[in-house]
Image (cartoon, rainbow over all chains, first blue to last red; front, top):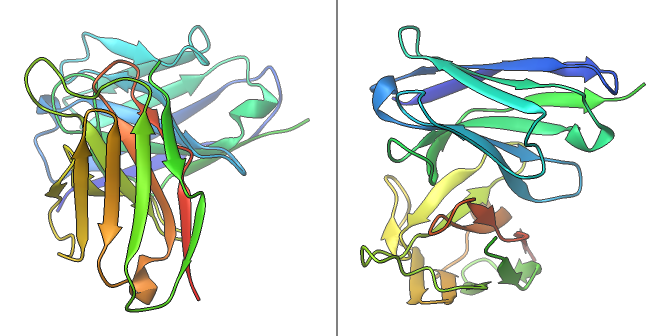
Length: 120
Length: 112
């Protein structure tokens, strides 16, 4: 059974940083991209970042480029999303999602999400 | 970026009745590899999104047959043949024909 589980997040201050982690199981981790998609209050789903299966390519939405960093550890089936210089609009549930192929693209399985709340 | 536009944005359906959601893209989603990269997701209340349909009309593993997808080019439709109470939630279309992947605004479906 494919499973992804996020951790990290919580309450953070504007200008601060937060690190989200994703642990995966049930599939060959190093063959698939990992994506991060967020759901902000009152809004729809927004793809924000992705990393290729090998970790050699990273992808970011223009809205977060320069402030988000993504990485993965294929030896431990984990991926991470780090958010710097937090803004109010980063408040959202962040989902880790397995890609359907090795590079950027759609997602088939999603984690339960991690809440990031930005407030002073 | 490709803009995805869904309609209606909300839908109230009687159990057992059919429902239909439209999704239009600002550019054709037909790739040069002859595949069309249009997906449908459902986010049930309190849950994470789940994949329903991939590449326009293919049901994902475990998705009931009452869900079907159709369309081509820039116009796509998700149909639920007989809505059940468990189908409530927000439905999203998404394209991955062109980077970055983009979602529609979502269509909220509830039961009358």
